[in-house]
Image (cartoon, rainbow, N blue to C red; front, side, top):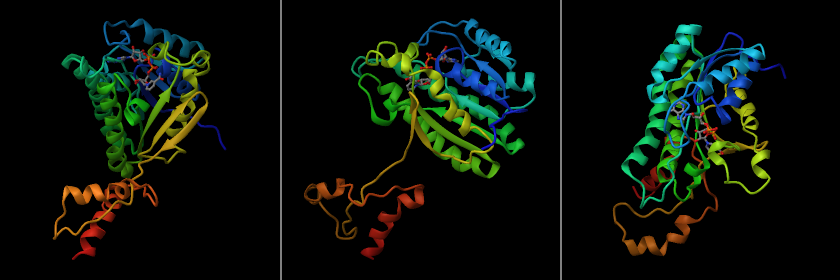
Length: 301
Ligand SMILES: NC(=O)c1ccc[n+]([C@@H]2O[C@H](COP(=O)([O-])OP(=O)(O)OC[C@H]3O[C@@H](n4cnc5c(N)ncnc54)[C@H](O)[C@@H]3O)[C@@H](O)[C@H]2O)c1
């Protein structure tokens, strides 16, 4: 296997002033990329701003012989981050959407502001940054995009209705961008990372925090963004040196006669079979997803 290199490639890593984003930025730079280190520098709950965090990571990269520029913009103005990449490096090849905050509260106590801010930073921020970069990547006939999802979105987590909504929304975003980007060699994947950062302080069992080093997430991200990697539309869980791929699974289901109709009692009587994963399928796209439904229509035609 040859070395994975990003010479002449420009990567934006959002939220790269600390935690997992910082680790991504350092690894991309080590492998030859020119890195835009974006970070607003606020608190975990999205308050305040400070350009120091991004500047410090740029210093680290430069001290190690790499090339980087700091960008203090809010991802909600992601077009400015792309502008910074174009002004300083003249191109953009890779976008790693990583910036994130938390506003954890039970749904009963959640305010509109908590809901909106989480949506804005995670979803709108990733949209604005990726959207501004998209045409540049299309013109270069090369692009790689990473969205940062979460197990809280995939599986749910108490107190994270807003965050879970945003994080699984990013996977829906991934699926469609992968379809649209493929013909222009733009590949799009999502990760659900686990790392010991300021965001997860106090959450893991004793001893685990130090083992869950943020830098253990970055080799997967870096590989997914390489020319060598043709993977697209996928979701990976990654952390602590372990990584695995996630896919949808759907039961074979049950089919009633669409012309005769059926009752809620019919559904109840067949509910166990409806939910049985024996012989389950793993649809890869809309066409595969509709296969059983279409077969049912034909069966009773
Ligand atoms: N740490 C985990 O176990 C874990 C688990 C699941 C998902 N994630 C996700 O991984 C990503 C990185 O999280 P982390 O654990 O490194 O947290 P972190 O708080 O250490 O890093 C997040 C960075 O994003 C920056 N940021 C926040 N809002 C921003 C904005 N509007 N514009 C620009 N920068 C902004 C912060 O200043 C911070 O440096 C986040 O999207 C998070 O939701 C982390």
